[in-house]
Amino acid sequence: MLRLSKYMKRLAHTSDQLCPLTDDDLKRLQNHLLGMFLDIARVCDKHGIRVMMCSGSALGAVRHGGFIPWDDDLDVMMLREDYDRFLAIAPAELAGRYEIMAPGLPGETKALFAKVVDTHTVFSELSDLRAPYPQGVFIDIFPLEYLPANPVVRSVKHFIANGLVGITRFTAMYRFRNPEFRRYMSGTRALRWHYRVRLGLGWCFSFLSHRTWCRIFDRFVRSAPSARVHYPGVSYKWKGFPLAAILPVGTASFDGHRVPVPHDPHTYLTCVYGDYMKIPPVEQRERHYVVEFRLPE
Image (cartoon, rainbow, N blue to C red; front, side, top):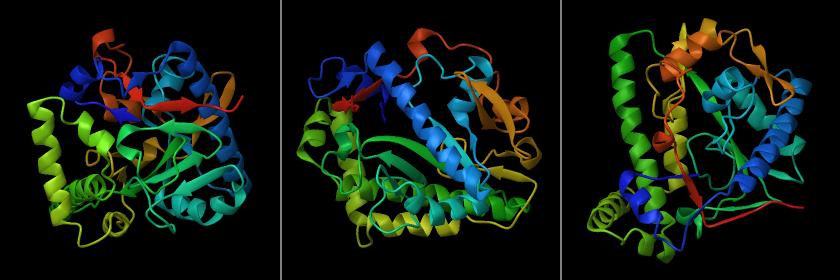
């Protein structure tokens, strides 16, 4: 979903292009996401693929016994070897209702990790209105990569990977630009500067397609097995957490279902969030805005 910077949040309150999800929308979205996850989990169980909830979804399972009340997405992770097997199997297993986009699959992709998209839904984000990839309610699937044991190698890979993350974002903004998003980003001087700089950087790197840059990143971040793992495409990418905190996969209660979570949720969530049991104040909770949201009846 569109996660807004402080400048964009300020503008969003007066924009007629974006709207926050209502409480009813949020509950319906959460129920739909859980159904999608159960479909994914069934495919993984059938083929012996290890899958588990991660990030805010794992936090919700531990702290709330389900979704964090204000959360509007569902995140999943797999070790790289399971992730590659899933991408080889899932397109056929989930065909008919879901589409999967990922750097290693044919077609354009939005992100540096896999997304399972329910094509029977409508979920439009402003920056994606003219993008060529499938759009709808989605679940993110992050590949867990091994952290290099050598600190010098780890630092070099960290530096290069961060650069590649920026390049993929800039080229996506340039390649998939649309007038609606440009008008939105013209609301303040800070937003105009932010947009023009990133658009210019995207033009500089557009000698390769966005899909190609994503594939370069996907190949670059792979490493030999080690005692620590991380997800290199998100904000806390290079801290990592012990592999022993992930495997063997554990379970937790999630809105009346038993779902897979990391083996040692406390260690995992502490690595990711610090004091994860502390409820953030209302003003620090993310608000998410969409252009259009619709589920089948």
